[in-house]
Length: 124
Image 1 (cartoon, rainbow, N blue to C red):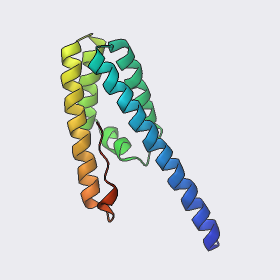
Image 2 (image 1 turned 30 degrees about the vertical axis):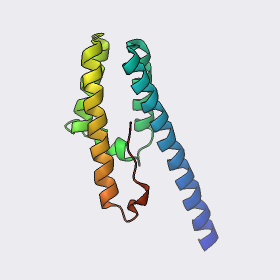
Image 3 (image 1 turned 60 degrees about the vertical axis):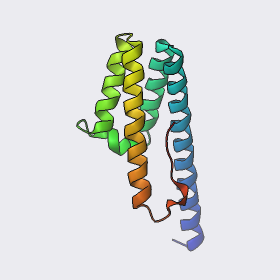
Image 4 (image 1 turned 90 degrees about the vertical axis):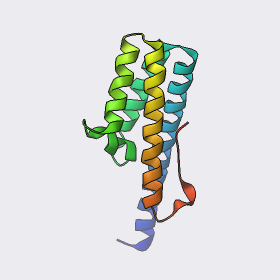
């Protein structure tokens, strides 16, 4: 394989991953807004979109974190789903805050372990 073919494949992969990360961030922001406004039905839809995006992006850090049913991120997602399904606004807000903290810690760990720490991410 030529260098230009490798570069092209790499660029295509990176563009695909960037798009997936952008979609995850947008879904998370939509989820955050819905929970903050008390729109639990909208939050359920946003959470479903967020989870779908995570599951279809197998190379993404979030996919790795939630694929382990015993991970903190996976437990936080389950708590949020339970609160939303129970129409528990306070519980959903609390579970979302915990999930956001867990994901921020996950991104921080990955940023600290990366060679280029100048582009660290967080979810807000």
